[in-house]
Amino acid sequence: MRHPAPALLVVLGGITAALHVGKLAPALPVLGATLGVTLVQAGFLLSLVQLAGMTLGLAVGLAADGLGLKRTMIGGLVLLAAASVIGGWARDPGSLMLLRAVEGLGFLLTSMPAPSLIRRLVDPDRMNRTLGLWGAYMPFGTAMALLCGPMVIAWVGWPGWWWLLGALSAGMAIWLALALPADANAPLSSRAAAAQGWPQRLRRTLAAPGPWLVAATFAVYSAQWLAVIGFLPTMYSQAGLGTALASMATALAAAVNMIGNIVSGRLLQGGARPQGLLYQGFVAMALGGFLAFAPIWEAVDPVVAAGLRYAAVLMFSMVGGLIPGTLFSLAVRLAPDERTVSTTVGWMQQFSSLGQFAGPPLVAWVAARSGGWQWSWVVTASCAAAGMGLAWFTGVLLSHRAVAQATTGPGQPK
Image 1: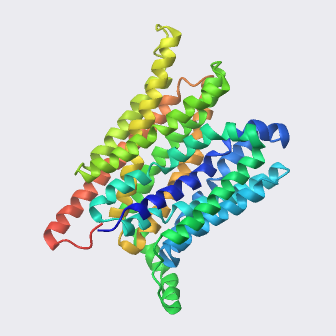
Image 2: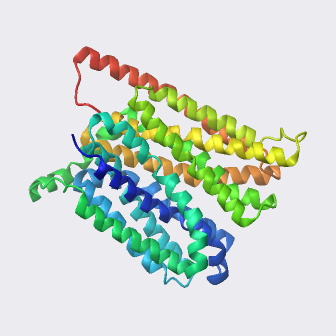
Image 3: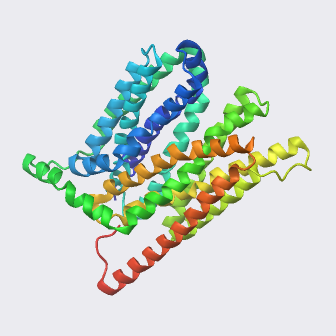
């Protein structure tokens, strides 16, 4: 039996990368005061980290499948370390934005090969559980950045926060290089042939329905999750909540998403149907968004109403966490073959980044047109409805695959 420790180290590498995604939010007030970062520039700084995922997700997935999973992940961490260390010396918003885009590429290179690595490092009877744990890397890293960032910045300033995370990424890259088994030592000619085989992998991935389904489902999930969690500090600030309390409340709302991710892995390992878990997650997000934003609490004491709305946000994030954990497992199962797993995850990452890029502006536009956040639930409910439709199609596809395998005999396990 293969020991699960190397796979857990892969999860830790993903958390290290996710810290870079979340590190900006607590630094924005200081960046505005020291570098003159405007509100518009702050918006670009927040979204530029998604640029690589939106444009290069599929390409990086193809590269990871052909060039080596371990090499790709370590290269991403090294790129994150270099961009973060250099970013600590940035003295104007333009330089910081350029380096933020580079960090987005480093994050993509780090996260893309992880599900394939986990598949190789753990036994089949532990794979779903470990992939569910992997699905928690983003909310955990985001929550840690939101919690630790203000304290570190107050102690060593925002450059020190950048340098600390750069050093952490460099250390993580060294740890992975020493602890993970090496990529297959194929001859140079074989590696070249594998790299040249990317058109075939691309065609196989995009010709199969599975990668499209998991990608579109991740897009409608990530669009609404980031829109709600990303605007919580603004909502609470407008409601008169203190900055520290608003940061803690947002960090908790992001962190509880891990529960759903981890539970999804255990439920899948126990035989739960992926379609059912997706339904549960999207229903909870639709209901949670409605209870959190709809103007239905006017007759309730304001303090009680605020508590009920926040409880709805926690349900939205926690039960919604069933979705990414399930989708990472489905990406491994629905990839056309083993050599296209990273390509499938890359396609999923590309759609996830697109959702994260489009969701917050859409919610902001609705809030601006309606003069408040009371109609934001329409956006989240629409995304959830689309997600349930995609979950139905996923269930149909899984049923057809099960019938085909029962007819022709089991193929390579996914």
